[in-house]
Length: 342
Image 1 (cartoon, rainbow, N blue to C red):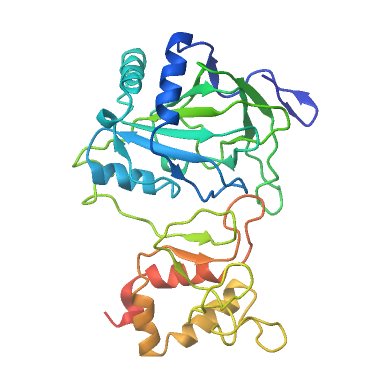
Image 2 (cartoon, rainbow, N blue to C red):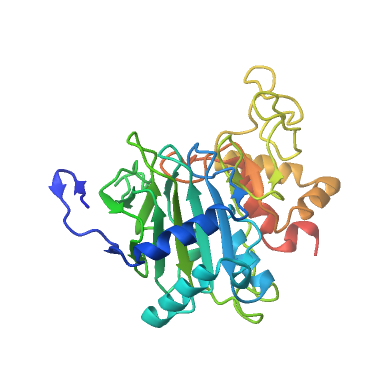
């Protein structure tokens, strides 16, 4: 367990590890039960590792649980705790007794070998939560890497993450992530691929969202906030997100959208024969307002209200695009109804 920042040795990581929290005799049966269970393959939003798998268990209202997991974008329909391994329910009960929280939901991520991992991220669905998260490790030993968020003083952009702390996590260890760990300007964490051999690993992350039928994640009360997703290879995004780019034929073939940033968005963009409409927010907004004078186009905009959008720009991390035409559309589509005449 170690780390450094600018040559200064960092002694205390922001998480606590309780070694051998789960007795050895309970580890293998649970790991085997999970390994043989149903898994969802992830397209992976963070990095280029394509073989990570997951499954989610919950107790509460099914639609509230789905709304919560969908906020993370890489999770499928959750499964009731009662349909999971009995050993999992035993562990949940022990956590409830020791910490006093509901632990209404459990993510299980499976890493087949040392080449499978997850890149730098924070858990967006935990932002603002006042309840800590607990992670139980089973199987192979891996480093839980942590980076303290820092930004460029002038541009305020995120700097490139690196492992300031590498917390060694072994089978049976319990990692305590404190309140605030997942906030936007707090930390990022990762399980990075490594050269040295690692046996298959499962990490069980226990969380305590209010999944009651009348809680904040219930369909009647939960308000989805639309956002932009990057559709480049290796990125995860909701299946119902709408592509708003130009026609492309390389790599991922996508038909053009009337919202694409090109003179003719239904043709492959070319700087000479089919250039950008604009290369900055101000100019693109002016071009968008011009297109919005057409009533038929405004109807197409109305159909996208509340929808997530897809484009090719990086949306997170140090490579986040400074200008993204889709962000302009997101603002215009979801602002007040003045442009629809209502």
